[in-house]
Image (cartoon, rainbow, N blue to C red; front, side):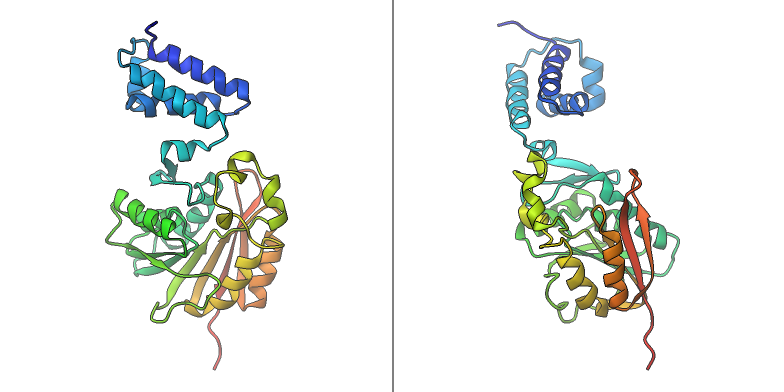
Length: 292
């Protein structure tokens, strides 16, 4: 058997990914190499011209590569992804964190990071818990509740909270966005939510890596994609303090409809924020104090 260097194995993986049409073939080949070899990226780059004496490295690369070439997302293959500079454990039962969603975390962090008074934040439809954890890690004196209906999502929320050493400030609970808030939940300064927002008929048109691998319940937002926005804007407004904010991520072309839904449910000062592709990605509204 021919002994190869780390770089030769990497180049073989890189070539296979490129030939399949994967845009990030170079970055993904490096991720596969580091996962298979147990090296950090810096160690792999340092050792890339050394010969691989452990035969399991190449066989592991082949196994991981086969999964990727079959369409499985890299995040599920690795079991971990990055969000807002934090490691996040992921699995097939939850949506993979995306850079678009960092806009949601970033906007809420900007609202509260200079406040010295303690804040309570609810991350509804939390999935991996990535948004709420990013806020908890960057807003002083913040307490965050991660809420989801999925047992697997809640398991990963708790695992990620421990992974990022946030157990003192972040808690995970079961709660359904379509139901009234649980009794004794208390009030919040903000609710953040990245709900399922793909229209049902569009699910089958998504990229294979999304359609065939990510959970449909984390994607399907109903006939027009707005079912979760309607329920949350109407049912969950009651747990926001006067001046509290509801912050949504949304899909392409949905921002205006969500603004209207929020206005119909008593939110004011409604603002939108764009992502790196100039798409309106986040909508934030404020609860005003009701007159007696």
